Image (tube, one colour):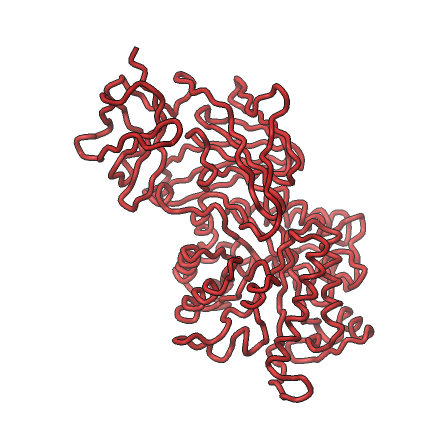
Length: 582
């Protein structure tokens, strides 16, 4: 990644009624300017839990040019426009703190990259098998742009569908000897064909070898909807079918992990795994109907994640969230949201239907993935606006099992982590061998890296950066992170609190401490004074007599932090203060 400039302003300002708009950071990557903003109610911003680790994903569809690209890459000018379309989409994601892009890479027996196994999909140039030329590789470009923004890119693989029966990809599969069945919805590989597991595994291995993708997401890894019911003859029972699909999953898992064990293997199963004791799947579920043993794949480690397609409402959604989470076996489940139903041409969902699902899934410990990109970025019924509010702070994609512990970054010889310049900018330099680094900032010292609100930038790939217009009250910390998502201990800025230079210091005369104005707008019931080491020192009940000040007469000279605690047992730092009576 090239040198990075950040503009950080952490002072919220009221813009209308009870809403705030807070610019968390502006990232300048040589050419584009990307402003990450969050808008939410002040009370929510101060008190609502924001997870530090959470998958926030979008399915970016290339099939039939539904989401991207809209311009064919037939010339250098067309390639440039196609690239800009993707940049604009990713910029939109970044402003909503999306951290995972599921990009449709194998479409229907055809690809969006130069493959030695299958032909180019027509979505890139408008011609089946047509390469764009001019050295342009859409997948390589997408990976680079996602990583430039700290996002993961997962290659979305359509597995069993083979497209129209007369399409180039389908014809080539027949020429290779694969068994193909044709239905009104298209042509499909036969999951019982013993050649299918190795073939699909080879495609996934090709992608992982050639590109620094962060995941392989298997779509339609199941028996097609129109497939005849099991005959119970010649190895065609429900158990046989589940065994066939699992054999494909295992072959892909083993190939991918042999190349790069940190690449996440996931799939998008049908949204209901099976019937529950009190709730029916209404004759359509993953395990019994389409032969997906998805929960067993989690248990055995064949999957690192699941993205169940939970495009339902009410009792068809909420009970099945609990079932997925109860059978996650310590791995990650990300709810698939039917965002397309917010479009009246697709369904009759309301924004409340969607936001309720997002709140409940977060409380259950699930991330979320929107299907699909267009319906999010076009802000159907205000869903994009809500996404920005919901993701008020950045989040890191959750870790996966494996990998060693990570050594923290170190400082170059005789060089501090932070160099503050007279124009208000800050330069940061560090050393390390990790692929990623996470940047944290806080008015409190030491910086608490457990607090998601302190995360400024995740998955940064450089070892230096320049910050513009930095609040002098901010302190910084940096952690190293490996490809499995494991973090090191923080490298903290060496700090001496400066009474004159730091506007975050709360004024006092040794007797009375003046409270910041924003405490008037929060439901604080108790103030907590802590030492520099973070240990609680004094608790003071908030009363109307306090007004905008509290007594510190009996507190010894020293440096302290003041925190506010709310009725909901949330707390946040109000600032630091120095008592110096002599």
